[in-house]
Image 1: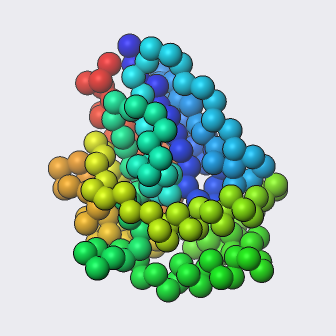
Image 2: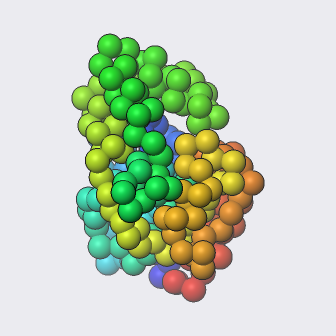
Length: 208
């Protein structure tokens, strides 16, 4: 029996982020969790008795590694990381100052910060309704503080032109043997859902 795919989106997005990839994965059952950045969290139950392959995009991959909410058979990171910011033993991480500036600005202008972030990612800047400032602020603190290294994943899909997760950060996060590169940026499931789906199908085929 094919595994079910648990999809977890990144910061500043919601479960609707996965719509193009879900359409491209016809034939596989997918369950998308919503972290509640816009209008409340939603974590639909997973079907019982099925293997789970967790797929996290960006912060979603870190969230999965940090919380480990289910016992998955495999974990896939898309534009992901196990640690976002620099540490003494992780110079490839992003400098802390820009994120701290973002955190400081968020309290006064949350919608503007989210819009700027979405635009920087290469997506639509329009902010969904129902913005939950507390949930988004907690997510920013997670980006700053969580360190889930070693980031043990079974497949990493990375973008060579990713403006948020530079190639050096991706290469330092995951072993070369599990990493596949796309020429694109930070929103690979939106930029090229068919490419992501093809890599996932190839990875999933031996699992059932």
